[in-house]
Length: 186
Image (cartoon, rainbow, N blue to C red; front, side, top):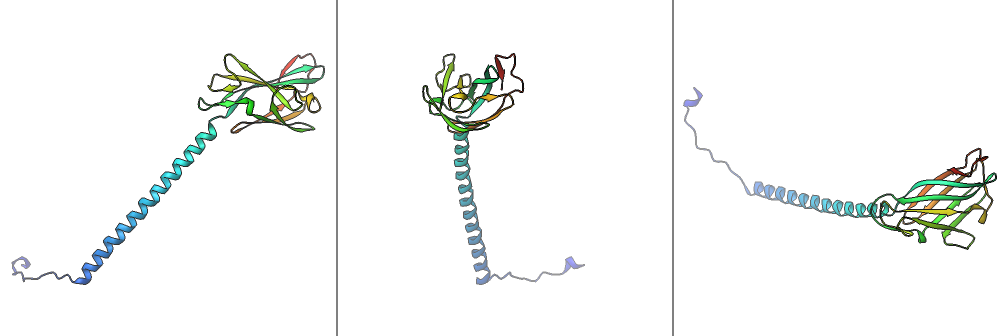
């Protein structure tokens, strides 16, 4: 049997070369781990910065609740756009907002105010002011198209871009038949 043979005394030899290779492997692994940790830290800080940017962009977004128009004869005399905050974070001062009106025959940038040609008026609902600071706050922006361009007629299409810290784009289409109506949903 093989197990009955006497064992000869053998010693494993490790030389200085093996020791150098072992130390080099440990150093390479340490450096690689350091690089991985640095890259992970960099990604973590970039992710945090991106997250903050997205949160700031979402704060102050507006949702259009409703859009209606007051009919006078065969044209729309005023357009009422009711807005609210899209989330409960942030505040929006509508007095600082601009409204770009891209109508059938004119492009106009409107500002909040009264009396000037290129303005819209703000009506706050409830106890809110022109500063929306909760999801329950509402405000109506009233636009008089004849003040800066031609009136809106049946079938006309308008694109509104309300700019605060972010932009809210809404497309309005006037119904084909305005007869016998005093107010229409747009």
